[in-house]
Image (cartoon, rainbow, N blue to C red):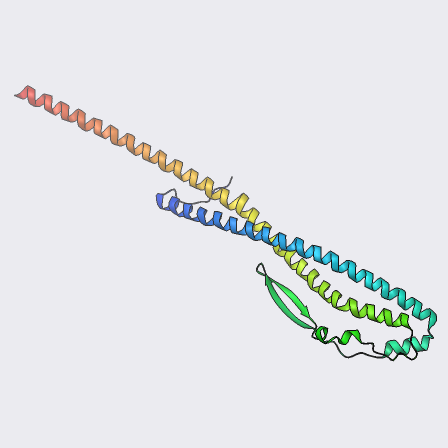
Amino acid sequence: MAQIQVNPTRMELNRLKKQLVVARRGHKLMKDKRDGLMRQFLEIVKENKILRERVEILLEKANQQFLIARAVMKSEFLEEALMIGQSSIQIDVDTENLMSVEVPVFEMPFEKSGRMDSLPYGMASTTGELDMAVMALNEAFPIMLKLAEIEKSTMLLASEIEKTRRRVNSLEYVLIPNYEQTIKSIAMKLDESERGNLTRLMKVKDMIVKQAIEASIKADADA
């Protein structure tokens, strides 16, 4: 395991211990964030599946009704009905903070007024099949908009999950082990240095005691 290149001093040891505490706390926070993002991601994926299935059913219904309408209506009447425009649609785009990820929020003001339920053409020259097809599309449109919002949110969350996962792995398998190994190495060097100093002090003490004894014996002999 790689070590951080620092001077093996007591000050550096204390500094690295503090950084290790911060790294472990950051690792826990990042793991909690990753788990929270995963829970949000799974919930959104489930909602995405439900909406997609609903949209596919409505679009399939609209296509079937259009085919029937084309078969029973004159082509010029069908084209004229489809060429008639409906009132313009306004989409409000906003963002929402979801686990520190800015996800889009799409809203249609006309949803509350019910303008999408009206048909853009008269009923004199059209059939019920065309009406059902248009109504199915009208019903599918807000769901498709919500689906677009959710799929974009899913992409953003997946990207953030990947970034968070890399940071967690970097802390767990690189930075924290490096701190631990460096702290262990410095502690061993300091202990070794202290043992060496203690050995030298003991030798000095023995020398002083020996000199004191010799001086005492000499003094007794002179007396």
